[in-house]
Image (cartoon, rainbow, N blue to C red; front, side, top):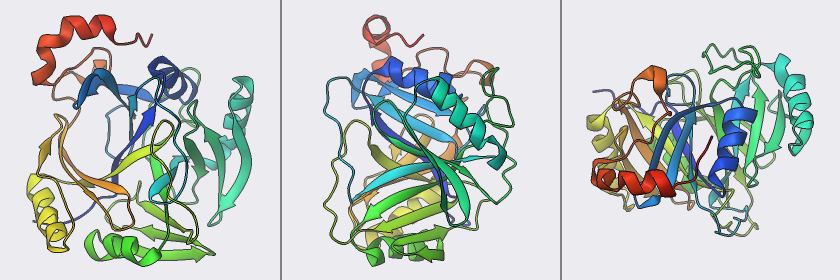
Length: 311
């Protein structure tokens, strides 16, 4: 058994209006809605999954849309920016697309020699479209509006804002197998060599910054990828041994997972590759129907009426 973290599995955030969220991520960014289901803890709200054609780990961004809750506040103890990989040549395409559609963005900047464009989703969640110098051969989901050479390929990485470097860095390096490869001022880049993509974690250290508030427009948690349940539970033993509180194994239908809050205050999840998103619907029609966990199937008739229409 090879006990290995294989980069980012998925990232989960909180949204407001569900249809507005769908319009932005599916129609503006051109991602595929790969799963339309409900929150395990609140079945009257959606859990929406966006990704590439296959729902490949490392491409999956999920949302809990919930109208009426207040906006979040960026700060420490949370993930503050999600990085997507794009071809460098497509940056102008995205600038023009955002201008045409009235989308708020910040012009090109540079991070560790890679150009990136910052854009904010309708709830204020910060995304970075990064023209990585490293070749990315992943095949993205495409549409007539977003052709393959301009499409988002999946995650480049994520930025976590923390007050102190050492505690979070210890989890990344000594438990997850990442290594520190670059530093610029208060930004530290960690990479895992276990996968070619979705392999970057940037730690932004702000000693005097106050903790943020996770709500609408915020990342709820970051999930790291493991192969299967045996490896998942081996990591659980390691995390328990560090004196951290960690959940039991949870069946999320499309993966098994555990959750714990790392010492810097950010909620981490470990999620398995199996069984995947085609376990309950075929690849060709992913995301087209409302898929419900077994315990909520008896609510289908009501939920199909009360949940917001996305299209």
